[in-house]
Length: 393
Image (cartoon, rainbow, N blue to C red; front, side, top):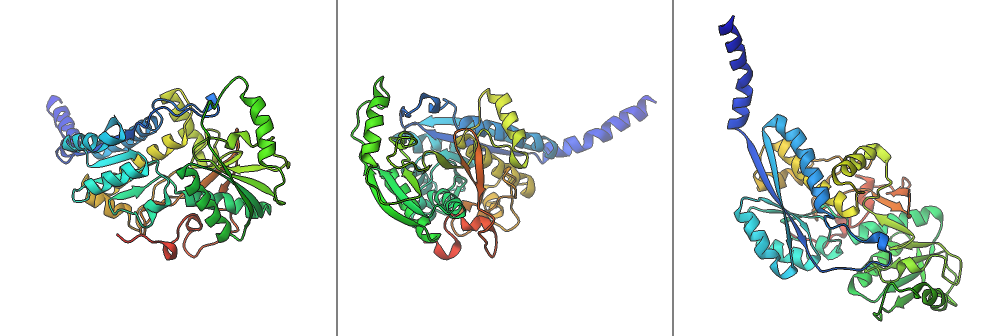
């Protein structure tokens, strides 16, 4: 009886021995660029110190849940660096075995990383940079974009404006470069979907205190004066990616109009109230693990980790070149709690995904709107479709 029991135990251990022998280990570096403190208009919007990192950690845990049954191990290192130290920090992580870099970084740093590692077998996943140029003339073959582009966000908003028949826009944009780029995205979206920008105004950032005891008094006088005598319009579109003025517009404009764009009804990747398509489970899992709500950056970093996890489980490989080829193939898809499987556009390495339109507390709708059709997938009505791309790898 003892010999039989020992034989059975030995047989039961065989799969574990095989799994250990063929074990796959994938190391990832989650690189976050520290651009210094940014003071939002509302203290409710102060970012958590682990913004983005927390999402990646939950994604890593999700990968491990599946990986432990397949002999796959996922490891991740959190790295914070100043822009000027980004390449050095990434080199250290790569020397330690990282084959994937999840970058929470602005455009300039992302391009520097892509060019530095261009000849190495490294995948860079862009988890935050929204610049349209990164998906067009400045595209890089070794960068996969999980974060949506400005064009995708603007198109998602514009489709809903068409559905609402809010066809005439007053566009107010900030004076910073990011605001100007966002304004370009709104102009493109308006033209693409047959909307009309009847007037544009520039809100100049003159500096000074952004939150003071008397701030609301000054703003209450400033905004009506700034928006006075505007041409007839259905909606005010705020291009304020820098966060200087947008939240001041609602309830203060001369004409009683809804505010959309970077304030009011905002196009986002994620929202903590979202519960559609099983999203409640990731919301609760994240909140239990991190004791706070999930942000856009958290979701994008989580999704970046899940993209890698899905590719490893399907290819049974930790080779970045194998993973990248599969991720960009027609066979790849990943669940993102957005109603359908997500996949990448091979012409510019952009992840297709739905765009949430949310006010302060609720998701109002999800684009693409069902009336907008496409020969392949309605997700490709958001952002740059293949005939529009300027990307040439």
